[in-house]
Length: 259
Image (cartoon, rainbow, N blue to C red):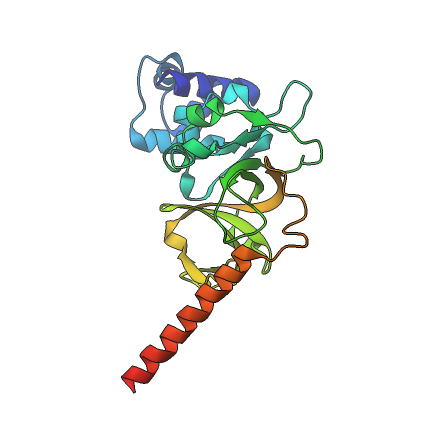
């Protein structure tokens, strides 16, 4: 509980409060509260919850993150009392954008709420991205051209599903993985998304599986794309179009057989 002890001591000094005033608000003795600050005793859950509410800081944050490292006013709280997203800045004051590496993209699903994991990531800064929390995610496949397997999408954290805008693209971090798609609409159960590649059909992502949502801000591509197939047939497009036509034909044949 050493992190917790350091945090409540830091918060008390930052707010210019006395141990007695905090203890009075918590309904405990000053001596008992002092033991929590000194690390000589651990608070039971009900007291821990009251301390969290008193300082308006989530329990996850109180127990796992050294609050002295981050400006409290720049911390974005996540729903359901989960861990927070601290907005980090470098020595020049630029917003740090954490980079999720391609090889460790699945590891993000386990470490996204672990402050030590996030702090271990490489980062970059872009001077035109200042207001908000940004993160760079690897994307691939052929569902969202022109982004290929060496592209990073830089997303801005979306605090509420109500902030989603029809027609814009988002990175949805779900329990199954990451998906970059265009937002179509939502209902009480989930959100309907679609790929820009017309071969892929729209589908619904259940809200219960969504852990984070990041709105597209810009992209970084490590490949030189040039002019796509300039003066040449679009072989991939022809193939996908043919594949789609075959699927439509199969669906029609199956429908006729049922009749």
